[in-house]
Image (cartoon, rainbow, N blue to C red; front, side, top):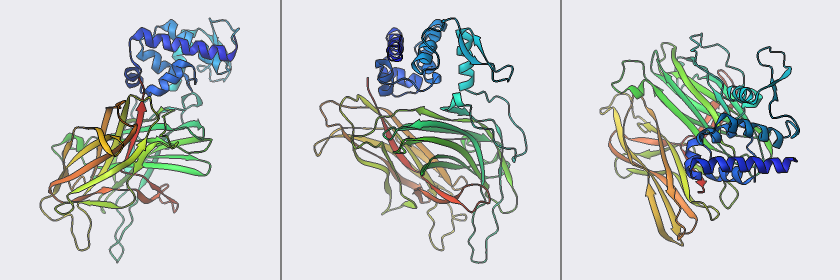
Length: 466
């Protein structure tokens, strides 16, 4: 059996599992965290899954047996040229992990499946209650390029530097690399990157950021979300003391290159008098989908708020419609869209001679609603929205991360495949504030003179079939 035949057989096995499960492509996509259009390409043999973790995710979502997993592993190895079709089904070469020698020895296929899954999803169960300067863990193994689970640890939040005579100061950020993923990408390829961080047990009020930097020869994409974390007992709202931040975006280098994406925890204490710490409890960085469909212009449906702050407050600036995707078109055939919008809101819009730390009230209340529209010519053909979220945001937290998601916007066949989407931020009461755009001059590491910029508030769309 040649490689092309094996790829076809692999696709038939995946398609048979899907049919046996009774799941549609969209249902299977939600269970396996892979877009329905990508699943369709795998099941039709157009492309081969890039790694065994992807195969295992699809098979597990379909309720596969051990024998199914063994058959899939065998065909995937042959399709990728790792072994020949003539090798016996009873064994495959896997690393001798126990000896650490690097030699290879035959294993039974169920055991090989277990080893591969263990390699792909590293364990992070023990908390490193160590000094914050403990070096970050090494990058994930080569077999695990699409996901890396963070090791729990303490994060130092350095005290605020004292202001210089003119009253200005520059924050001192600790920047901790937590783990990386890698992907060989083509010129047209778009991937969905997700980083999740959960933190708690702050000793003092601290800035906590989840930043992802994706770099390749000659280029980079950087995204960051952030929210201040309060010490235990400082608030009646647990989510202000136990903070979860998700940074997610579409990665599109536009060139053929190996791309490395690294997740960083950024931290700084919000007091001049002392350093602080908080605990990173858990998290991960992963390439949730290695092949997201682009718009008809060949780029992903994604847009970000430019640098600076968009004022939101009492009349006349009560509303901001940002982030926004003004117009984008997909090829015909998609059945629904997954629309994601992450907004960063800063309480108290900074102005000359304005003191944010003294006035009453000490919070800002606003609503955040995600709207998506499908068009027919110049007329609205179909419209939907994510449930509007009313947020009372305290000045103590100051920077608030507001994630919104409309997972199943129906694409109507009687409308044009042209869309628009935006978040409407509407001030309701209390202090004013602003939608945060791209941030400039973030230090690459603590004390570094080299800096970079990163996107904050942004919106993107993943189309699905089936």
